[in-house]
Image 1 (tube, one colour):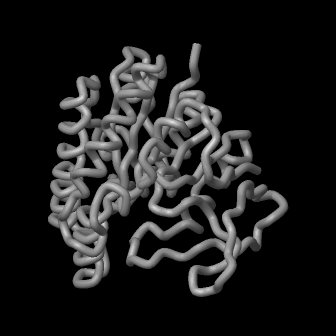
Image 2 (image 1 turned 120 degrees about the vertical axis):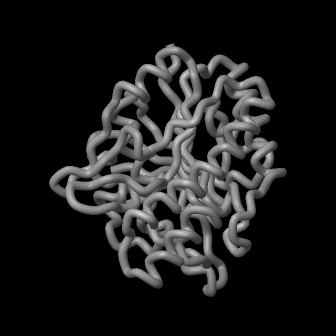
Length: 258
């Protein structure tokens, strides 16, 4: 039996991050087609997570710049806009005859004592019945206030719950580079072994991202990596890459392991 597949779709992949509240509809449709092909290839246990892009990150940045924290109204506003983006993506999946449903992160994830707690049953039950849950980076409840949980962290943590041995990160770059973008002659790092390369230079983000860029993507999973789960960062803008990555074909990208 094939292991569950976990794929995180970057916010810059599914939205125009420099255009508030604007989805990349053509890209979303193409991703839906590739996920359908993965499904038809026999991979029936798929968990899809997407970033906030110009929906969640835009609204959260606006709220944090004015209020410096997320209050009740801010929580509701971020949640509403993330639901909107999620509906667009789920609708696209449904149009490709995929059994996809929204699974709001705030409904099964919270923080207690500073630790992220995931109620596993909603996620496991859907996956076991071969329904595709589509979750996202989201606002979540904590002991005293409201916080943002990145889609990256959700993806990493879900690997332990679902028994996946790798988490796929579809981004808008080919992987992790050995030099910052302003320096010439940079190359893709094919494999990063975190336990040996803690000081590796990671490419920064060109956009404001309240949950961090490539550095955070990797280091938010450090505890999961220590347990043997790997990550694979690749370019989801390249047609066919998502299908190839999820079905085991070799493509350009960066493997992250401990």
